[in-house]
Length: 102
Image 1 (tube, one colour):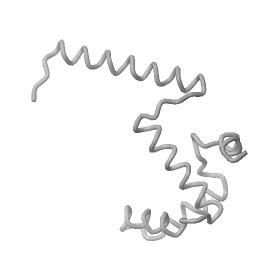
Image 2 (image 1 turned 135 degrees about the vertical axis):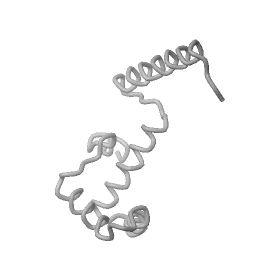
Image 3 (image 1 turned 135 degrees about the horizontal axis):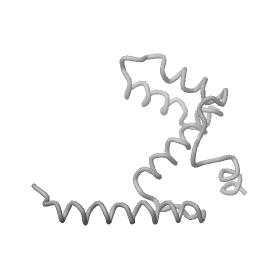
Image 4 (image 1 turned 30 degrees about the vertical axis):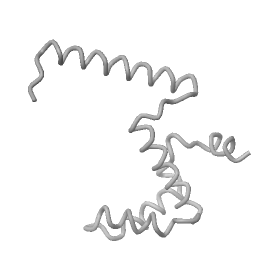
């Protein structure tokens, strides 16, 4: 399906506005659940579970190993980086986690 130059410009402008609105909402502390934000939150949750050997950590390790079959030690390396603080959650900061628990 070919898109003409005017339609392409309209789509680009709509995307620019959408991104600006998402940034503004993020700055106000009420992020929009767009695909990238949801993926980031899920990745952060998995990091937190791996860091403390929480429920499901073995399944997360197995799934990561399945996603990268040519690098079998990757799950262990990731867990070590998470525990050492070299790989940190972006969206689920300690303050956010504390506020959801309390």
